[in-house]
Amino acid sequence: MEYNHYLQSILTSLIIFSIALLTGCAKPVSAFYPPDPNRTDNKTVYIVNHGLHTGIVLSKKDADPYMHSFDDFKSARYLEIGWGDENYYQTEKNTLWMGIRALFWPTDSVLHVAALQTDPVAYFSNSEVVQLKLSKTGFIRLVEFIDNSFALDEKKQIIKLGSGLYGTSRFYHAEGTFHLFNNCNTWSAGAIHSSGFPISTFYVFTAGNIMYQLKQDEQ
Image: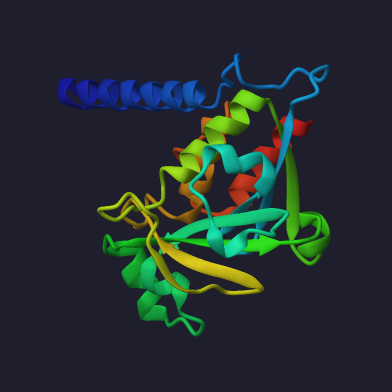
């Protein structure tokens, strides 16, 4: 009985500690978010739900000063960026084994960058898109998070891979190892969280969860 009581106390403490962590990580950073509606330098980013994963769309003009130069996309109005498993993300016809391997074996990662010339909501008219308003500081922090996700060669240049999935797009080597607890959606959540937005990164496994958290803040 005494052992059971001791075990229950430990479990209760762990639950309380976990809730505290989740609550703490879901709080906005007041200096960055929410943005002051009276300021004229606020920025808008777009989060796109592609079903299994999410993409983050930025104004290229706004992001350029804080991100490595993309010679492939000089004329782009927007850049959509996503992060994922190196093999699964770059393969058009995925297999069940590839999905299992990506989730349960730590694997290398890539970034997918696509150039958009039209408004992201119109371009992804068949997908769920949420607009996120950020302060300039929050926007810069988000862009820097994304920029730091690109792996660099010995000359400090981004490492280009093959063509991307749609339109004018390309894959690049990325920092970080992909697995179940560090997947494409936890990466997106980390980028969003860096802006000061109150999104929890502890239980984000699906694109749907990211969209749910974004919409909760709108209410």
